[in-house]
Image (cartoon, rainbow, N blue to C red; front, side, top):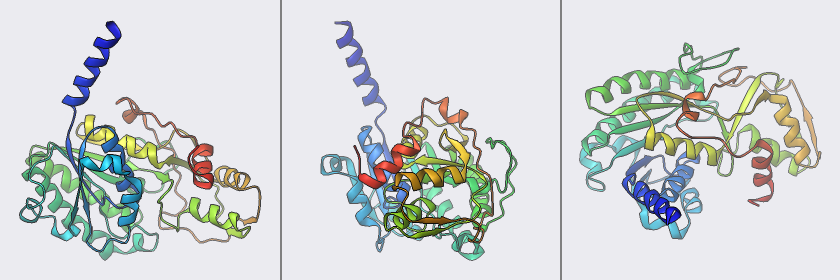
Length: 324
């Protein structure tokens, strides 16, 4: 009887925690994975996708048929997320996850006009979230907001972004925090570090390495001498789900618990690819954030009960061979 009573109690808790959650950028790498995670946790999801999104198949691939009962897909461009437009599709929700942000590629991260055009569209999303009853607005910021760091990065580490991408995300955070306060919403700002996994952009280091070495090619890299941190996409999605459920106003680092010299991760990928092909260090130019070190402190998010569970080796094996 004690076990049954405990199970009944858990079911009540899960039911009480049920939410309607809006996810913008829902066909993207992080958005689609989080949509699936939220549905698995028993929430309803209103997934907002650009009408011309080439990544829509990614959302359908992530969300199996048995989970789609709780899914509503809304086709709206980021510039059209006004209260008037959005209420035609969804009139009530408890929380909003904003992952929509144009120009994520390395080249676009340097372009001010591309990055800063996102700010007003995202502030419109904040106002719309408040108008449909949301009490929490979660935004996917970036470690690029910190700039070039050499020590452990905590949420109160001073921010000195060097890329326009990092500068724009930081500026949005400042404006959104103030606006959410005025609109009586919690503003939860995540600074996401290096996430990898199925559905990632083709230009990322992990995908480039794996695809090159599977074809026994030569991978040209920078020095790879900086400290780095990787987080598997499923763990990232669970972290965002926890923040939507439990996050309080403030900033949270979202990263893995395995920090090493980047070259060690590269060599592990090379080994898991059967040590085929070759690798040439020191020939690739710096990216938009230069040789920033990623040494994140994730204690604040761990305190909410979240914990990364997929090791780098396991994550790479799943990319190479599929889930076990």
